[in-house]
Structure formats: C-alpha cells, structure tokens
Length: 177
Figure 1 (spheres, rainbow, N blue to C red):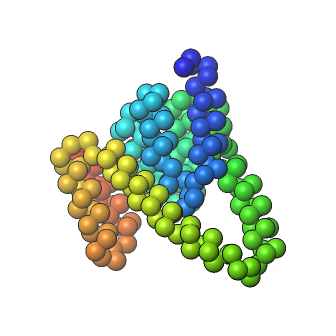
Figure 2: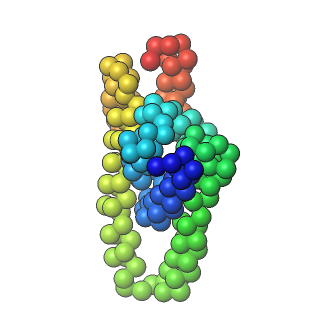
C-alpha cells in the first residue's frame, strides 16, 4: 500500500468497524490492532498499547482520543481528524435512527428478545478485546505478571480502578515495568 492510500485505508476500515461495534468501540480494538500493527506495520504493539493506556487514563470519550492517536501516527493531524470522525460518525447516526425506531415501537414483544440477544455478544466482544490488549501490553515477564495480578485484583475486589492505574503509572515512571 502506498503512503498516499494509507489514510484512506485506515479511514475506510474504521468506518466499517465503527458500524459493527456492539458494546462500544473497545470491542473492535483487536481488529484495529491487527490492521494497524500486523497487516500494515504503521505502529508497534507497544505504540498501540501505550495509546490505549493514555486514552484510558483520561476522563471522557477516550476512544475518540485513541483513534485520533492512531490516525495521527498514520497521517498526522488530518489522519487524527479523519480517524476520529470515521470512528464515531456512523455509530452516532445509527444510534439516532435506532433510538427513533426503538421509541416508535416501544413495548413491542420483540424488544426484550433483541436486548437479551445483544448481551452475550457484547460480553464476548469485550472479553476478546481485553485479551488482545493484555497480550499487546505484555512486553516481558514483569509486564505479564503485572497484567495477571491486576486482572485478578480487579475481578476479586471492589477496588477503585483509579488506584490501580495510579500504582501502575508510578511503577512505570520509576522504571520498574
């Protein structure tokens, strides 16, 4: 792929992915990672996982920021804008249309079936996304051990994730990870 067509390929890919991202954009991050890291080599696994970590540490719509980082890495500021728009334009339009349709047929007998059918799909996509991101972030034995420890801690306690994020940032800042 030529350098000139890279932004178009990324934008088109994000347009498609954003149209099928049930459960939010993080559910399709494995595909985004495969596309930008494995297929095209526009960034490394470490770049991708660092963009994810930075985006997750900031309040607000963090996937807009992450896809902006990915687009910026591929094509600078225009890539950041195009990637952000491609990521969130289609879902916003579909959400608006779906809401209008859902509201129009409120109380219809098919609504609980649709809602119940989307739950396992969304859960599966979130788990798959988490697995891919954990693998991308594990750059060595210490990072892998940290991933397992944090996952265990978060699944077995009610600890606020901000404390874990702060601890991870401190360990990374001191060069211990």
